[in-house]
Length: 184
Image: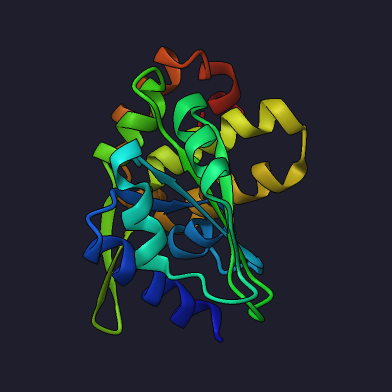
């Protein structure tokens, strides 16, 4: 299945099930910045324990797919991650569960942006919050990919971004120096 069609289908299923989400990571970079290759979909969600069975039913993983109910419950309790690997797709979805203690994640979900692809509404992290997320990940991994992604998003979406919000949130997340490497 083509990645774009897979994302559209996944978004429709999550929305029909009432699961709060927004796509982040490389796929969001391709929306707010320059297209780049990615074989996984990263999304954040405010998934609650009472929604686990609804999520499993909505995605209906089927034979040969991977979706572990215990991993979902653990991710909800710890604010961690669980994976969904659809059978035969070569794709992986990383669900990052946002807990009440995760202020940045809660803000990302609140500020998500709706885009419409071929008639399907899909929620994405805002470009400002994507940059903040990439700054946080850059600190953890030291990968140059995050810096490349930030430059890409700024080049394509920078003129339409809320720079005051970006700078204010960078300061509140102790990322001012990190952001200064990209915005002078």
